[in-house]
Amino acid sequence: MATNFHTHYQPQNFDWRVFLLLNEVKDSDTETDTDGHEATNRIADTQDLDSVQHPYPPEELNRMRRAGIIASIFSVIVGLVTWVVWPLPLYRDYIFTKSFFSGWTVVSEIWLFFCLLVASVYPIVDGRDVLLKAARLAWQSVTGKGKRQSQVEEQKGSNDQSSSSAVEDEKREKVPSGGEDKSKNIDVVSIS
Image (cartoon, rainbow, N blue to C red; front, side):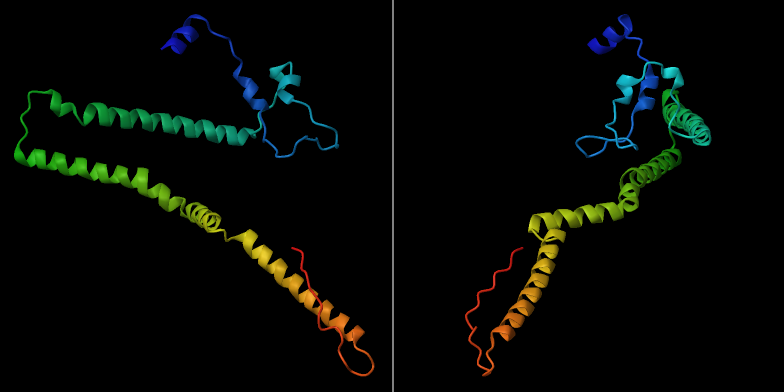
């Protein structure tokens, strides 16, 4: 309430075109531009927002405007149907017959299950690959297994193989001409 009141009586005159300057956040500590120089803050450095070009091409902007118009039209239609046309018989002096009430209830239940499918089930089906990957990574994180563990095991296995081959080479070098092996007590330490 207070925010709405404050915004209405003391507007800030904010220029929304400043959002065109936003770009992807990088993980590096110091960002550099394509020439290798340290990047500057585009938002702070821009004085004239009229010269800023939109990051999307004009064809994409036209497609988004068209999609926005279609979404607005369907929003108005669905709003009118669900808030005016569908409950309109309830606001009259109409007494439902049993068959009309049964039909009304059946259609309401069909809409209910359709909405359940669209709002709950479809997002799960559509994002099943991402959900499975997230669940797999979470399970590996909880159990302590996963890429890190398998990489450590692979690295350890390759180190053990290289260590054992190095030990065998070392043994061969230490074997005297008499054929007797005097290097039986060699400690192998693999560093991983």
